[in-house]
Amino acid sequence: MRFMCCGVLSSLLMGPAYSARPVVELMVENAAEPFSKADGTGYSNELIVAIYAAAGVEAKLKVVPYARCKNMVLEARAIACFNMAWEPALNGKIKFPSVPLYTVTPVYFQNKANPIGAKSEAQLKPGLKIGVVNGYEYPPSASQLPKKGVIFVMGNSEQINLKQLAGKSLDAALVMANEIQIPGYWAENAGVAGQVEMIFPSTKQDVFIGFSIQHPKGLWALSQFEQGYRIVADNGKLKQIKAKWGAQK
Image 1: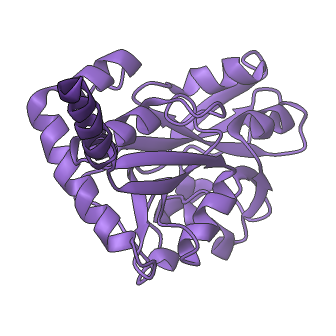
Image 2: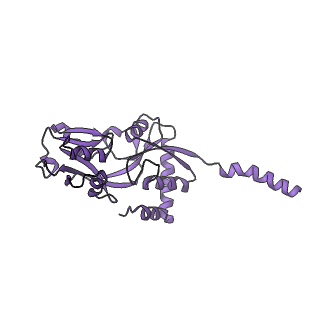
Image 3: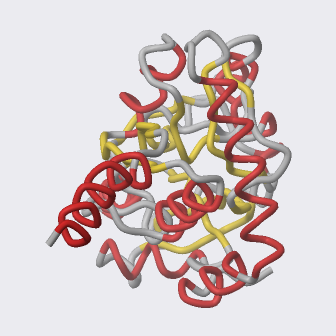
């Protein structure tokens, strides 16, 4: 009896110490399928949880609209946000890891019945209304277009923008294509494949988890990410998750 009591007491004493590990709460966007979906699943979500687990940290994800995700980390009200790409407004506020989560290529779509007559970004004319997603970062070749008179119309998702393009309330839409979702995926997903078409790509850009420099746990969380990433890259977990979600180089 004494042995059992001592064994139980030992397990009670050791249990909390054994299970206790640092916790990090991270913001994640809710409409970037298949990387980060509204239900909290996705390639990026699974990868980041695995990365922190490898470093001995429990990652808790809070799913929010991207604009909120981005603003919270910019204002240091959140430790980190993903999926982010670089833009000048992040300088001095956000720090990215040494490796991206994935790479995207923004592509332009037009209405088949109402072509815009451009074959490159340089040929886009002032006054054109182009649908973009609220809060998204676009490469300089695209983000500088409003300075030339092109009008960016903010939408809440790629699908909404493509539907508006099909309805002719937009002249074009700028859509994020990637190694999983080829451009045609978005048109089919929005139900407008017969009405819109891709015309040309913009510039490739890497996508990261971005850490707040001002948040007390920001740089610590970044260091834990870097440590965990090296572990999952070495032990095959990264390759396994990529194979599951189809995110092949």
